[in-house]
Image 1: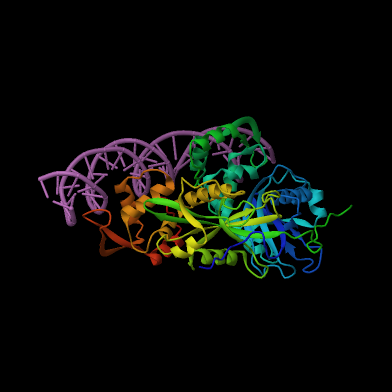
Image 2: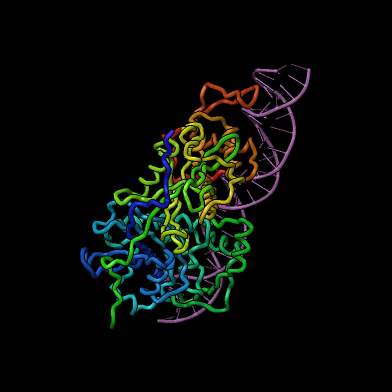
Length: 234
Length: 234
DNA sequence: ACAAAAGTGTTACGTCTACACCCATGA
DNA sequence: TCATGGGTGTAGACGTAACACTTTTGT
């Protein structure tokens, strides 16, 4: 009987491998995405995710971190892979596949001048303009993943400054879930998780009375994760 | 101010892009994985996932379906992308990144002779031998995803024959979740979803009394999905 | 004194869990 | 008749959802 052997060492042809980043941030009560304006032809001037080719001696993840650092000045950012986009015709130039990562950044941390120098802009998540190639699809998939993930991991903390108030956190979840939450139930649920540390400071930027600031308790969170708890926040 | 422009059209270097498949099946009350024995050097004789290079004129997904069809004879299989594995040193030969897909197949449908002719074997999920390269990691990640996914989509139906009994379905979920479920509660929950159609036939292969066979109701399932229901089956 | 956001408790409801017995059948 | 797996109901625990008023403080 004939054997169709799939031989790894008589490979066909090479292609370009790129990485693109969905960079999410949270500011002014809105979820935002960082996109940039292409400065090269073709499609110069169109909006696009931030990306780069992956070098031969570089992990794909490394490449994504490099891009992120180049554009925002940030390192040690929460980043996760969304997936590979590999349609044969996705790029009209060369055959290129793209590994998309999504990153969550504290919007006050990044280097504004650096970002501007790259022609990058923050858009409200509902006002992102049409993007180049299959980047619209990447965004849609990324949002879906973010929303699903927020249900079982308290991922939102990555988007807030180190000190934050409960109303801020609630607003963030409302934006992610796209629905309003009951303040009493939200507060009750969050506090019952024991992953918030109340501080003795208040943030008065949003009200006369001011709201207490909290920090995220990474230690308790790790324990909770181990115990198999899941974080559904409706 | 100097501008670090990331230019998509002065790309660095190309690399190989491969696709590997995690092929899951369910038989004899056990979740199984199809792996194959490499027939080429290096690492000839070692166990490996089934894979292939992606051709230049081929979608990544297409490539995975091609491999699956070559090995099992099956088309129209449930398949989803797990992610890209892109560490620089993952393959000791050439720089290659791999896009991993996982597939769920009805274990009685596949072409046994074809599978054997490729040196492929089914292993109990708990008895899979060590795999080549980073394939162990792929398997671990795939199992995690399968387990998570089974919580919010009735994914298990893909692994059973078209007609199945409730005890069979329960067994499958027990294997996926790695814990025993209460038969009464399981049955109650499943039936309440209204996605099972009871048939007038019984399967007597497991008991004298026999268990009623059911079909999956795709139409109702689609409606349920739209209504935002989620399928947690504990 | 008033506007505006922060903070607090209780009750009703539905869902999940735990649990024990009868049924149908072939050998 | 008996051994084996299939099939059924109920009560208590638990978590979620709904709901309105008081507090603080800068202007």
